[in-house]
Amino acid sequence: SCRIRASNGVFGDPCVGTFKYLKVRYQCKRPRYTHSKTVCEHNRLHLRCGRHRRIHVVSAMYGRTNRHTCGHGPIGTTSCKAGHASFKVKRKCNGKRSCRIRASNGVFGDPCVGTFKYLKVRYQCKRNHRG
Image (cartoon, rainbow, N blue to C red; front, top):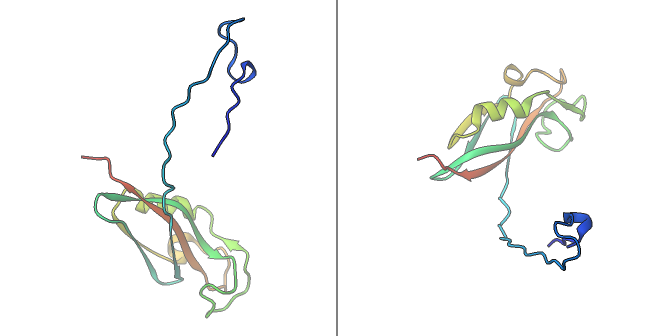
């Protein structure tokens, strides 16, 4: 829900001295479902969308931000993220129906040497508008 103040202060006064009204047309849309997938270092992440839908990456993180995710390897820090991870995953996957990307230092660089990392990607499947 939202509120809009119908006042001259908000919209200006196009006709001074005349009583005005505000007419609003609106449409409620369902929020898009965001998928979240995580894969441990040295493994491949597979993003997939259904027929007539294409991948739209919301965010990606390669590194480590907690002790629980992929916690079976050495953890020297819980505060490291590779720069440009979102950019790299978007460049590889956006607009495709299916995409595979390896969670590795070779792809993303090594933001925390000696720490076992993981790749976490949040994405949506958007309707394909191309003919």
